[in-house]
Length: 132
Image 1 (cartoon, rainbow, N blue to C red):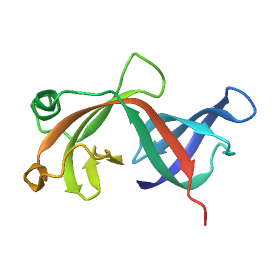
Image 2: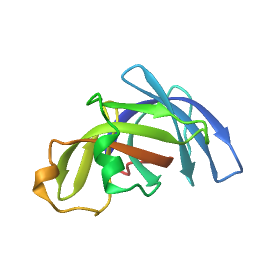
Image 3: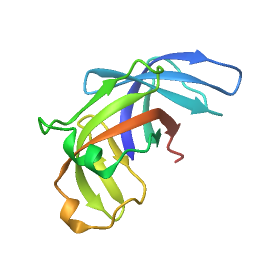
Image 4: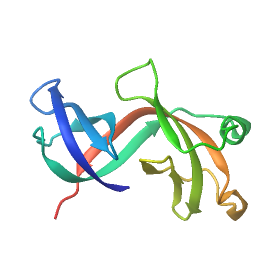
């Protein structure tokens, strides 16, 4: 999904990949990038995507007990988060996690889930620039 972010810092792993720390709505996040160049202080239109951990249906629909819209950092890696969100659409399947909206793949096509609050495990948040 498209987002407008401010780049805060970059930590290169090698000449092609690394970690970008960025800000959306005053909140900081980190994401993995590959084959792009970012500069601290830069405002950028980016696409955010992710690799997820598989979860059981009942976990997805029961673990957001407070009906929250937020992303919480995990202890697993600097790019991993727990998402507490709400399903916005099913074609494509999009969830709103507050600052961040993500497409979640194709694991349901049931329109009854639109508006439902969910829990999601993000193993790696990915960032890429939108080419103009």
